[in-house]
Length: 488
Ligand code: ATP
Image (cartoon, rainbow, N blue to C red; front, top):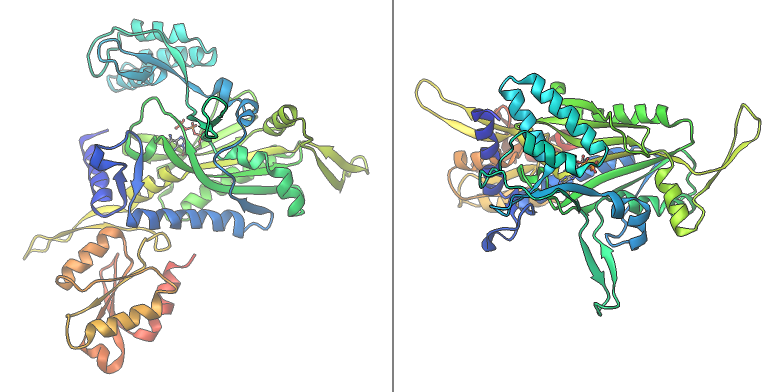
């Protein structure tokens, strides 16, 4: 991260806190590592991102429906899904600092270092060895590589390392009042399994025909070994996932469709296309037959925001085996080749899985601008969030020019006429210029000022966030003006 981008990132984090977007969780107790709270504006922005996703997945596709499954699930689900056995990271401790690291991450950091120092050959060689060791689950080899490449603990500076162990990322707790008898249950590490185990419930109750999708937004929990980069890697986060059930043999075609559709969803918010790229997984999980990530260029480099995976019939077959319940779908459509119905089969699944918190962060980063407004006469600047209006936490702010002459009452009357449709804020404190700056800082697209003329002719001044241009409009036009810009 160069000094400028480093500084920009720090400024965005500070801004997120100062303006009620993101707070460190439990801050008065010195925080809880990798856990964050969303403040008054953060909660609105997050809800708007969710609504944008839900509308484009569920509302616009008549073959996709949404569900809300429980966080707690039967513990066998996580055996069937492979999470109990395999959802782990290789972990290593430094004996002096007692700090814990992900062994693969230490090696990735070393590769970055080699790259930065122009030692491209060394970087490539180490990457290859790391990939091989990870593929073979060879924990001893990971440790050997750490020793061979003289990687020191960033805290103690020593190379006194423990063995490498697998560390399962699932949080567990107990269900029921008596600990002895209680079953161990997990906090779900992904929302997808709630969709898989319900797919026949939804299919039957909704009379869904293949191809169809089930979408879900919800919390997921992972006991990440190291948490860093703000809300990029959290221990409690939110996912927006959609599982699309297709006839075996058609998965490639659907995979390509969803891969394109999901990138378009991102670009429709106006983000520059060069900020995004696809990353193809070359090391596929044993059950996957294709996997791509959509990556965004964060200040610290390109990072995954969303995954699109072709998961074959792995998950449903596993659940059929572990639960002993049939997971088959009867497809009545006639196969043109055989002239008979396609009949019973376990559908294949294409999954799109996006991290809401990463989407939130990239939205803030994209929108954040420290704008220089200086003229020859005076120095001036503002911090503005150029959020897409449909995502802005507050759609319009209403200011009475002064606190007297009936202007506050008139302003509140206008606010009342708008607040059923939009999130509106009322502000009467400080000079108008200051109030504009506060709204710019949270990305409010419109500021509406009520003055003495309003009392005479029911017109107001409306000021646009991006251009700062002002115009006089009839108060009864406001609903339409705001609606036109902030609607989807
Ligand atoms: P990474 O490689 O970055 O750990 P992943 O491949 O484990 O991510 P998936 O299991 O595919 O991620 O989860 C889907 C999405 O959930 C990711 O694209 C990401 O946006 C989000 N996500 C995953 N882990 C976290 C986390 N710890 N904190 C915040 N978001 C996360």
